[in-house]
Image (cartoon, rainbow, N blue to C red):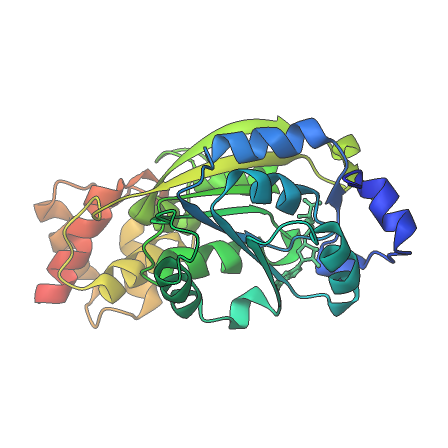
Length: 289
Ligand code: SAM
């Protein structure tokens, strides 16, 4: 079985498309460590985004109960079908991950459990295309899916932003959004020479353990994300200015000042110093008034 990415590329005469983020992993040890990080086992349904030449898909197929691999590039499907022909627990879907109905895919696969093994846990594992990392991650987080854990290879800076704490330069709306849904943990870094072709950036494998319940109680989730977005919207402005300039809350500067004061937040503070609890508290006040 050809597992070597370079061999597969050569055998199937694959032409890599840069605009689709096609940087394939050539280091099988890294592939194994990614799958290890997700602790994939026979009870798992694993969704892989962008199987590429299939090196990680094979590793997943050997360990998981079932694998659904969604690849946008139709030119890769013949090679993938060949690489995966010995595995009857893998399903290849030729589609844009942003357009698939994830809930339907998951619900149907969890029910159709033909070989007697209980497939009851959903995991997502992917070496993501970097041109569309955040939208893909947010789709998986926001669609209210019953996912246990997601392990992604992403650009190092994106991993830093997702896992950042309040106060630092990397903390922003992405940190809050990711940490509202999950506990992020950076697992290891991957240098460019582990890919073909080599990307211009360093990469990091990040594990997002999905929270069973949200870390904060919200009166209105939309208001929470609106507040977060407005607070980070103008990073060099103080919180009171960022919130009042956003025009999102139908409140004047004075009123916002008073709200912040009642919460014990200094009006001169910047949005990037607020914790998720403080954003929740603030959004809940906006929702009430
Ligand atoms: N998993 C392979 C590996 O690790 O070597 C390939 C990873 S490569 C970084 C990203 C893959 O995602 C490519 O195969 C690319 O064609 C695919 N891809 C890009 N955009 C996609 C999308 N919107 N939906 C599904 N797959 C996509």
